[in-house]
Length: 271
Image (cartoon, rainbow, N blue to C red; front, side, top):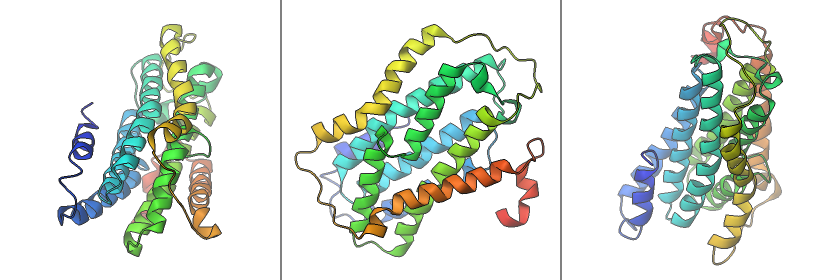
């Protein structure tokens, strides 16, 4: 509620904000917020911080599409994002609780062998956040990016949007590698018991929602379908940046330097 209150307020007041100079300023600020949060999430090792920064990135996306005057798209993304982000936070909570309250993702690894259903929920919500086709995040995110591609905005906003989308994929793959694919490193006395079935009931409801709610809502909310007319490469641009982000995240995660802070190893590149 606290996170999305500002976005919701601006969606409600969208008629009053029309044709104000404020909106151009808001567009720049929210695109930069999106970009900054995506960059920051790649250098974090705290599980909750990564998820919070990804939320900030999505809020930047909502605000920027709102500042183009498309309040219905902003609300649509708000609702779909609520589904998978709630699921993501629940999975992270279960995971941190089972790790004996340790939040650092460097301590985790091989979790999918011990709590497979929670890991399934975590991964699906993560991929829905990335905008993998036909999960719920795809319907809102892809529509937003295509409407952006049709609008006559400058190259800066365009690049910020697409790079931020790629960065989303990047830190999600990084998170997946650290928690699921890494070796089970006993850097902490684990508290891994079987699945938390009380949590799983609500998690599976949210899982169903984060698979289905995108197509349902896009069918129910919009009075008329958006007319998208783009050349093939521009239409596929979202998929291209996702693949690029996937490979970058994969390659960075494959460097076998799990224990050392990657930031110091990649210091020149980061600068």
